[in-house]
Amino acid sequence: MKRLLSGNPMMVFFIVIMLVNQVTSGAFSSPMDWLYRTFTLLPGILIGITVHEFAHAFSAYRLGDMTPKAQGRVTLNPARHMELLGLVTLVFVGFGWGKPVMINPNAFKHRRIDDIITSVAGVVTNFVVAFLFLFIIRWTVFTPYFTAAGGAGFGLTLAYDILINIVYMNIVLMVFNLLPIPPLDGFNILSEIFDLRRFDWYQWVMQYGGMILLLLIIFRVLSKVLGPMIQAVFGFMTGIVF
Image (tube, rainbow, N blue to C red):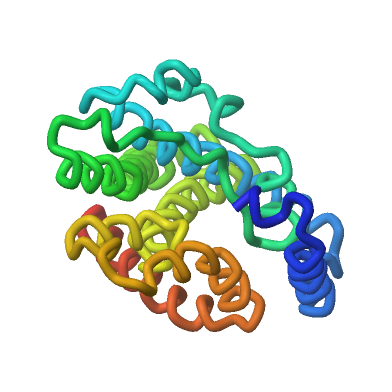
């Protein structure tokens, strides 16, 4: 996604439009509320992107590709997986990205299957982490001991908001990355399953997929599609844990 912005005035224009949408929607109308939302969302953003990209790197490395290891991506250090511009954009306009893991599919023993595993690893890890933090909420925030220790005031509310946003951001990343639009994982998974590279339109979609994705976000098409999906996954997971 970073390549779309570099030296491309149109992409910068799209980001400005998204920022204007945030301003006109009242996202910054209360600076203190915005700071609180940002503070409680940041751990979820950092954890979600870090585990997602780490899962790609680790699975590719274990399947025989040394590229992620050579680039220092087989780590849970957030600094190795974050793009500053993507993080800032995510905080201010609600859309961003991490540093993509570079892999060499030709290094895999079973190219198509291993490529699918590597692509799926990120979203599966987000799913597992969301479940993990739901269980943490279940056995800490809602236990009598935690409530007695932290009270029902600001401390408990802050802890709950941070934890639930970690759950939420991991679900968002999972669902979003499963969309069948390049450069997202969902498109790569479909490409390998159905060998989409053999079609003439494949290169066109790969070239303009990022722009298509941005347009769908700007015109709020994705929010209408993703919203119910995210809520369905969240309801399913909370129903199991609680």
